[in-house]
Image 1 (cartoon, rainbow, N blue to C red):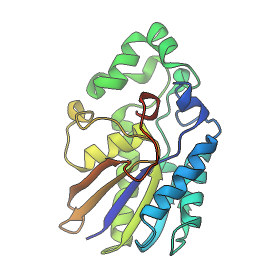
Image 2 (image 1 turned 180 degrees about the vertical axis):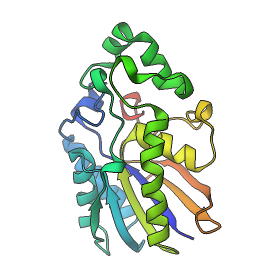
Image 3 (image 1 turned 45 degrees about the horizontal axis):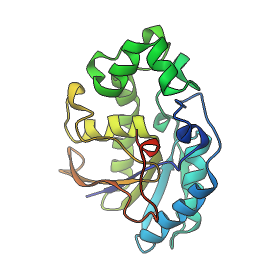
Length: 218
């Protein structure tokens, strides 16, 4: 059994401003985020991680590096492009409110109806596109690290889609478990040599010394 610790990156300026970042957009991590990464590392300090895999996008890479520095085992980090956030095309850098006005159908479907989300007008990736590129990476990790703990640092929308897919949710039901907060951890165990997955903990933020607000969640 491989235990997978899925971590969403720390909070950024654009998260605070309610802007879409996506795969091509990025913004600096907030100062408070570095402390929260340390709080996460303290919480899992005695867990022996065989490896950390992370999205190469700066906000995720720095999150992985900061956490690794403060873990007892200080595991090696490998960056995988397959773990990047959704390509959100024209929506990247835009405030949520502006996207809702300019691309109302894409806005509502991206948030609540993954099976109806068509990114062709904005030039982005669909939910199935993201699942199709992330799942092989996760399966490779499971095969490479049987019976070990592995941390995966990625992004809110991409992680939400992929984790729910691994847990057996159909495309219309990918959003049923709710969103993920910045610097949250979701723990999933493999079963039957990676043929199935079991949810242990969803969107845990109990180790953070602050209340979660709406700008934290995607």
